[in-house]
Image 1 (cartoon, rainbow, N blue to C red):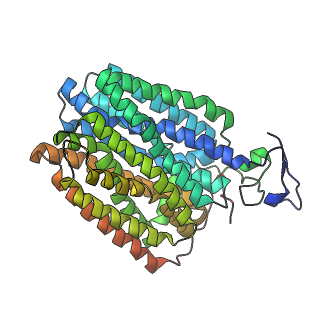
Image 2 (cartoon, helix red, strand yellow):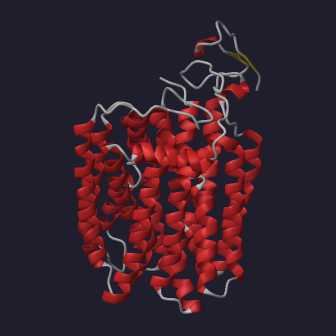
Image 3 (cartoon, rainbow, N blue to C red):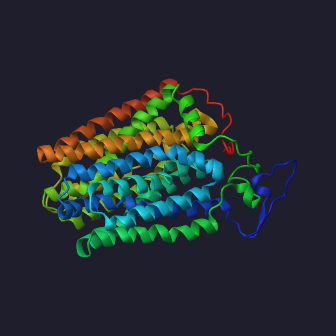
Length: 446
C-alpha cells in the first residue's frame, strides 16, 4: 500500500491524503495488534483448565498452584507501565515480538517441570512478563498514537482481543487437557504465540509518520525525539506525578477490585468451583468461554459508549451490576447447565472488561500525554487485586471446602468500586499533568 501525503505548512489534514486504498493504515495496525493480543491471550486461558490436572499429577495443593497464577497476574500488571515506556523508547514492534517469544518459552518449558518452583518461574515470571508487555498499556499506546477519532471504540475492540483469545483457546485447551493431557495444551499455546510473531514483524508499525500519514482523524505530526531516560525512569516519573492526585488513587482502587473480581477470581476459579458441584470440566470451560463471547460485545459497546457518555457514570454502573451478579452466583452452581446460570454468563460476560475503555479515557483526561504510562500503573493495581484474589480464593477453598465466601466478598468489593468511580466527579476538572521529558512519541491531540 502506497501513501502520498500532501503537506502544507508542515501538517496535513486527514482528508488530504491520497492513497491507493480507502483504508487508513491505522486500521491495519489495529488488526495486527488485535491478533497479537489474541495470541497472547492463549495462555490466559490455561490456568483455569490446568488447576485440577496439575493437582492430580503432582499432588500440589490448589493454594500452591494458585500462587503461581498470582505471580503471573502480579507481573502481568507490574510489567505494563515499563512496557509502555519501552515501547516509547524502542518501538512497539520490538517489544511485542520479544513479549510473544517469552510467552511461547514460558508455556512450552512447563512440559519439563518437576517442582512447584518451576511452575512459579515459568507460569509466573516468564509468561507474566511476556503477557504484561502486551497488556492494556499496549492498547492505550496503540490508540493514543494511531487514533484521534474512534479512540474509545478501538480501545474496546482491542480489549476484546483478550476475551477473543479465551474464546478461541479455552474450549480447545479444555478438550486437549482432558483427552491428550495438559502438556499438549501448553505446547498448543506455544505454537499459537509463535505464529503471531511473523505478522507482527511484517505489519506492526510504531508511528503513523513511518507511513507518511497522520493518526486516524488527526493531522500529520513528526514524532518527537526519543528522550534519553530509560524506561524505569519514565515509568516511575509518571507514577510519581500521578500519585499526587486523588483521581489516580480512585482509579487504581477501583481497577484493583476489577482485577480481583475478574481474572483473579472468576477467570482462575470458576471451573474448579463448578466442578465442586458436579459439573464436568469441559462444560464449565465452555461456560467460561461464553463469558468471552459476550465480553466481546460488551467491551466494544462500552468503547462506543465511552465516546458519548461520561466515563464515571459508566464505571459506576458496570461495577455495581457486577457486584450484584457475583452475590447471586453461589446459588447458581449445579451439576448441569440451567437457564439461571446462562443468564449469569450473559450478564457477567457483557460486564467482564467493559471497564477498560472508560478507565483508559479517564487516564487520558486526567494525565494528558502520560496517560498511557499512567494507565499502565492503574492496570498494575488491577493485577495486584487479581493476584490477591487468586491466592485468597484458593486458600478459602482449601480451608472451608467451598468458594461461597469468596464470591460474596467479591460482590461486596465490586459495589465499593462503584462508589469509588462515582467519587471521581468531585475531581472532574483536574488539570492534566505536564508531559515533561521521557516520552518518545506524544499522542496526537484531538
